[in-house]
Every structure is written in C-alpha cells, then in structure tokens.
Image (tube, rainbow, N blue to C red):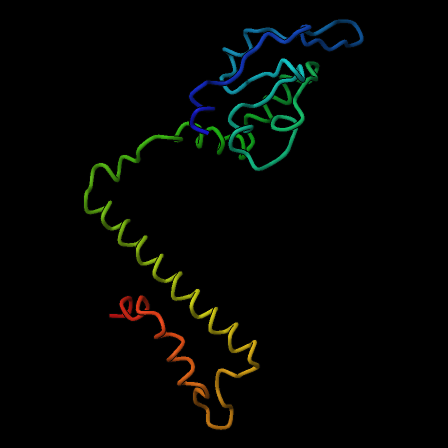
Amino acid sequence: MKIIIELERPTPKLLPDLTTKSKNYVRTFKYEYYSTYKWLSGCKKTNNLYCWPCVIFSREENVWTKYGFNDLNNFHHLKSRHEAAKNHIQCLVDLTKFGKIRIDTCLSEAFRKNIEKHNITVKNNRYILSSMIDLTCFLAQQELAFRDLAKKSMFYDEVIKAFLTKNRRIDLIYK
C-alpha cells in the first residue's frame, strides 16, 4: 500500500475527452481540475473520475470509490457534497497521516514505554481470555457445569485449576 501512495494519484488525460451533453451545451473535463482538486484522480480504462484518498482508505462503496464519476453536468454540485462528507474528510486525514511518525512518541521516551507496557498487558489479557474460552468450550463439550448450584461453589475446581495451570505462561502473568 505504501508503494501505491508513494506513486501519487493517477491523473491521465481522459480519452476521448470526458464529455456530457446537455440541452444546449456540451461540458468537457478540463485537465486543470486535477491541480484544482488535489484529491481528484482519473482512470483511462473506465474514462471516469475517482476520489484518490477515498479509493485507498474508504470502506464505503459509492460513485467516487468504486463505480467512477462521469456526470459533468452535476460535477460541481456533487464534488462539493463529496468534499463535505465525513468519510471523505477522514480519508484525507488518513492519507496525510499515512507513514508519518507520531510526534508524541518521539518526544517522550516514557510515553513510548507506557504504550509498549500497555500493549504487553493487552496481549497477556487476550491470552488469558483465550484460555478461559478454551476452558468453557471444554466444559461445554463434556456437558459439565461451572458450579454446583446446591453447594454454591465451584463444582470442578480441580479441573479448572488443572486447565489453567497446564500452561506456565498464565502462572507467569499472574506473578
């Protein structure tokens, strides 16, 4: 993806010129639109216009991302509406920030270490949760309950302890 972004947006001369006929006049696409609207890109094969940041980062499928725009009679109106769309603005931000180093992590070594510590904690919690899910699946397959309702205590304490301590990693996380 980085290579695609570094190659810059495609701005071909659309052949034959993208034109739209109206009642009294013919609108043609001007190559200068590419320099006026920095997000605008085109495709020679489909002879349509696209929004470059939205094509790369948007999860939505619309005329600017998937199908291509070719209605020059409504270009200025629909262009303005697209520029104001929340999704388009987010895609522009994503394109601008792509590949850039976060300044806050560079400025503070403590902040970077805090992020690393948090990521390790999340990784450990995911592992523990995965083990608990495995235990739940095991008990469900054996049709065993977590607890005895009459005694109001864990019914299979030994099974659960054995399951959780089978792996040294969980013991190390809790210590």
